[in-house]
Structure formats: structure tokens, C-alpha cells
Image (cartoon, rainbow, N blue to C red; front, side):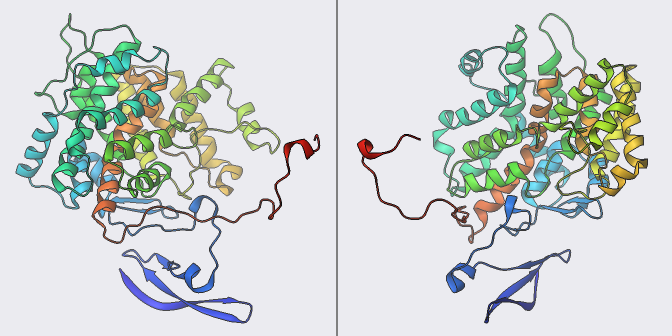
Length: 433
């Protein structure tokens, strides 16, 4: 990170000098930390789209060029070569681990996968039809009550063990809440399986039968988790940071991130894609009317899985996912009409002037839901799978923020547009509106 020539802000006949910061990849930021104190003014930025709240060394994203890198490593290389826990350690530590370091880390995480037996009562307190994202957020928040001695974000030991516990226990929570919703017996974690295989075993095995995890399915899910692992300062990562900036423990901070991810404009989009494809198939499979509806200015319908808040080019994750979607469906022998419709929509989006002009390329959600569906996951679990994948990013973002001595509690400003000062009116003197 370097410094360059200062920027000058001119307001009326006054000029103010503002420092300029340049990031590793040439990103330029005007430092306005002293703006309000110096001038009495604040900036107005809806959705923080033009605001860099932090300096981070975790993920680089260039939406115009379709670039995504974790700690400098291209996502195309990481997705095909790494294990999920290897990526989790990379994001948290900043360096690729040696084999012995990775083995030690994986062993520590694996031995925290068990949940307290009484946590079953938490899952059983929810209606069976409750959405898994709300259950997951509640369960993560509840972890803080089980480990009160490891909640101080300023204690290195507490941070380390809490981050490992969180990463280890979330798949067990997801599997147990799913088993409860299906009236099936809980399946305990197995320490002889790797992270992804263990999750699949807890989800789909039964005590009465021998269940073998398909390596091809485990590989595809490993890739999906990695592709979701971090995505810079998105809605949920920012939520984790803001909550954590008040020195909230990691369980509370990540639970807030889960809630942020649950919205249909964020993590819930992959569920929306499958629901949209199902609607098209139910209507006969003809995509033309739906494409025309998406173009209509007055029609609220829109094609889910196209376009991205940041990417103005092809989402690099979507290209990787598309290949794995085809491999998984071929492996499972699935003849899914949803995939046929998805491929037709992609062809239209890449060739239609309307989509090209508006840069509505298929994004990461477009194919992920089709893969999850083929693997046997119910639609309402898609966003939960996104959350498992995003755990390493949330953990790394929270950890980086806690280590940064310049971190301040999140406290945005506002522009007040309400009534000016007025006097209180006694209730008997108020007019009826």
C-alpha cells in the first residue's frame, strides 16, 4: 500500500486537502477520516457502494475484469487444487500451510465437531417447517452460552479455539437440524472422514445402513464451499465486522452474518434461481416469455442468477461451477429439466443485446442450486450451504478486524430529513388527522 498526491475538495470558496491511499492492485481511495472534524461535512453514499471502511489483506476482487483472489491466489487455481480446510487456514493466516501445519489444523477442527447433547433440545424447540437459516443463526448464537470462558476477542487463546469450534460445529448443526425436520435419527460426526465427507455422511446416512460418500460428489461440494469462502466486503461480511467492532464475540458476530446472508438479495439468491427454473419448467419449459418479462420495465419479474452488484463481467466462480454442474449431473445420471432450462437461459444471456448491454451475465448462484438439487439437498437448505462455505471468510474478516489496532466501532452518519424543531403538544390539544 502506497501514498500518492493528495486530493483537493472544493466547497464554495473553501478548499480542503484529503490524503489519497493506493492499494496493492492500484485501487485508489480518498481518505475522509478527518473530513467531518475539519469541515463539519459528511459524505452521502447509499449502500456504501463507494466507501472502503477497512484496509484488508484477505480477498481481492475486480468486478470489471472478473478477477477473484484469496490472499493473492487466483480462485481458478484454489478451487481445483485446495481442500476447504486448507482455504480456511489460508484465509485466516495469510499463508499456504505446509502439510504438517494443515494436518494439525484439520485434526484440531475435526475434534471439535461434536455438539453438546442438550443442543438437540434447541433444534427440537423449533417447528419442523422452520427455515434452516433462522435455526442456524440461533444455534450459532447459542454456542456462546456453552463456552463462556472463550468469548473475549482480545484473548488470543479464546479467539483461536472459538474460530475452530465454529468452523467445526456448524456442519453438525446443519445436519442435525435437517435430520430433526425429516423425523430421522441424528447422525454423529466421524473423525475418520474429512470435512466435506463428514458433512455429507451426517446429512444422508442412516444408522441402519452403510453409507459410502461418493468422492465425485464430495469433490464438487468441496469446490462449491471454496468458491463461496469469501467475497470481500459484501453485506454479510460487513455485518460480521460491524457487530464485531463492538467487541462482540465471534459467535454473535457470525450469527448476525447468517441473518444478513439469509436475504433474497444476498445468499438467498441460489434458492431463488431453482424456484425460478421450476416455475419455467412448470409453465412448459419455454424460456421466451420469461425472457421478455425480464426485459419489461413495468413487469416486476426478473431472472434470478444474472448480474452481480460487483461483477460487471462474467463471474469467475460461475464458469467453474458450470463445469462441475455438468460433471455431477453426468455422474449421478440425472436428466434434470432444470439444467436444460438453465443452459438455454445462459445462451440467451450471453447472446442477447439486452443482457450484454446491462452486463447481466450468469453469476455464482446460477448453477450452484442445480448442483445442490442433484446432490439431494432440499431447496431451503441452499442458503445454509452457502453459509457453511462462507464461514472461513467471516472468521477471517472478524479475526483481521480484531487484530487491527486502528479498528473503531462501526458508526455511520446520516443526513437527517425529518421535521425541524417543534414544540410538544398536549394530547387534549392535538387535532385528529
